[in-house]
Length: 426
Ligand code: LLP
Image (cartoon, protein in one colour):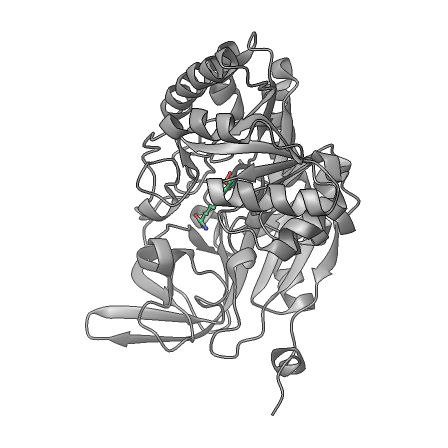
């Protein structure tokens, strides 16, 4: 699952006790394991190797330059969703031809930047966007390679906010309308419309929605080919699950076992855009207890990380396993479940300093007795953790550390109070 494991009652990131990282770099602190990150990437890459698939890491899940560079060196291509993300992957030396650019609202500036950079694929989400892209590319005297994002109307059975492949969401073009779009745009010189893109949602825990969507996409591609469209690529987006709550996420090989046979003879280049399944288990958030108190029937553990650091519990009611960095031997656990109820535990809410009742990292959890100054680890926090953090309540964003074996280094310094106001004018 990952390389955050207890030895002698101490949580380690690979070979480094996390208490040491917290002492050296302060808290809250994001800690990443290089080994876990690369292992998850390689598992996906290997599982889909019979298709010679291109694995485009979705940098929105964890965008730190050092993380992106490690994945680029391991052979990953990239999925980006903004001008800022384009600049990040170029900064780490990505080959622009191995970058796919998604997003339902690309601005003209972003489109120009992507064309100038020579981005490999534009995943286009509407007819108006396609017309705009064609106009801009024509003015620049260039050609954009396009995959049309179709909405396959498949339910991925995940959180409503991360469901994207259903008809009523804002993403893509209804698959029934795709043929018309291809016909209307086939003659435009400044675009080459050669791909179909779909993305069903995030934390999709079963393969069935992928199978359903692929079957639909392949029949659409056959139909498009019959009217002369030259479809060369299918991009299946991201969405594979991560391990959060003791239920093992489906291994990449299990997704591949059913997806590969469907595509092995289709004569298409195949792309994927995994984010969470690569980065989520590669990161934890360390936070120190500031105070403890009881109020009515509840016991609160007030920590120095908050919803501005990790918004997933507040935004999606997401579960992140939380456990002390130092425990007595019988409290060491590899199980990451809400109902873990070891003898001597008490039920607590773990809350942050932000002025909102929604500011919690965990609720109703059974944890060993906790005291001011104890260090806690919030697990499976590598994806959509730091990437979604903010400075709400004028809280400087936390630092990030990358661990490799017994070495570690700072890959993002902690923000300062000067950083908070640096772009403002009185
Ligand atoms: N491709 C596209 C077009 C996407 O929109 C996304 C994620 C991905 C790929 C990567 O999906 P992944 O493999 O990471 O599931 N903030 C939410 C997740 C939002 C996902 C947005 N799109 C969360 O914290 O659960």
